[in-house]
Length: 87
Image (tube, rainbow, N blue to C red; front, side, top):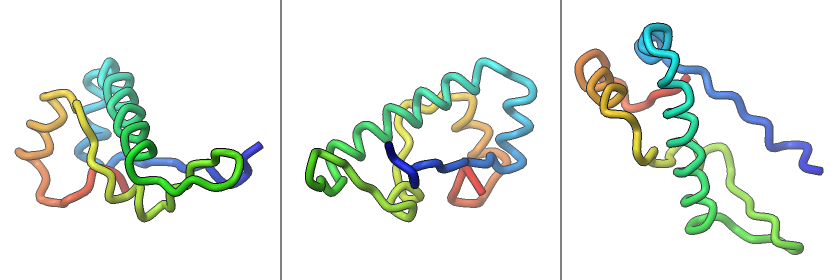
């Protein structure tokens, strides 16, 4: 049982607006986040006794997100000059 692995991501306003207009993007973004997290855990996590892979929240914050839908990337480039997708 892991007690400290519950992390919430809150999309920035530009991404929330995009999601309101296209519900399919939720699943596509979730898939991209999961795939990216799997890759980061395999390549960059620390492994503790019993096989526990550990990442710190700041390491996740810097995680590259692979395979984002083109619609999300385009909206990001057009409407946002921040370097992050989530609050």
